[in-house]
Length: 301
Length: 78
Image (cartoon, rainbow over all chains, first blue to last red; front, side, top):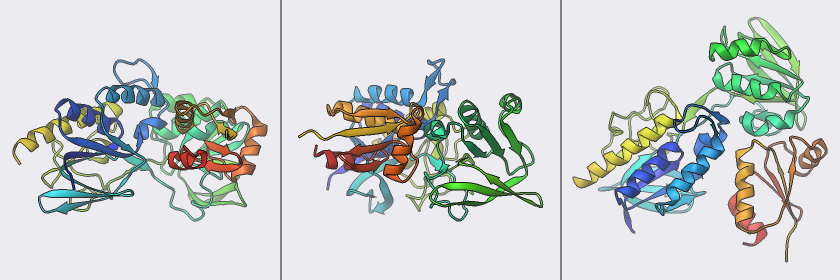
């Protein structure tokens, strides 16, 4: 079996930037990924990626794709790594389509939305429960909806929905909304938004589609009849593909300032790691660093 | 033989865009309904697919939910 110098797992901002750097260093590598773009595909308004005063996530991903195409990078799309294993001096990657051997790995698998963890959640996925406001908000024209989570993602969902839905409940488990104050002030002025803090979703009910939810607000149980809920309660790292590197209490892969993990030859970059600030531009920088670190590492093995 | 391809999408959904790009790249003609605007077509989509997520692709009556490239290729025979 061929032994690659590097396999990059994931093609979000971190993986793609690592790919560009690796290609320019003429490293013999491939990228294995479920999709191109990762979470950036779901971002709507991006106003803090330098060079673009305003760009949408899907458009920025288009730019990334055009850029990486310049280098004829071998990207195995629609393929996902299930396990990274040690194999004498190399690493063996098991995917849904086959196996690969490589001297080094950059794990850039990003994060996925956190789920509510209540009964019926799976049953009602895409039957009223959605995790992508950007995708599905337009389907709820003149409907009653709830947004779960009062962080920035939740507030963003409320703003998107305020132009579409008839009534929006914003449900936050903590005492106060946690997003940017500027946006909170804006949302408090929208009449059709009702904010419920100290509130936890305990039940989702319906037939084929959801008809309502029950929430626990302090000692009270409140029954809300509605057509859809948007879950925006944060994300978890896609770090389960590897067992033999150190992770922190949030299951993020721990990296040092050169993107080394605790195991030599395994590097990690972007939102799957414990890097401070989960931002597109930070992930890009981390990907660049990881590829340069791999290049240095390959000189000595 | 050309198959009839119907896409149910919204303006903002990234995977809808990927489906459109994919179909265009392969020179597949398709009808695109914006179910964020067209309530009737939204109901039709829900009836056909039994769910509310977009994109939904109808290829000669075969329903595919999401951007499942392999499945689309298989059904289209490309």
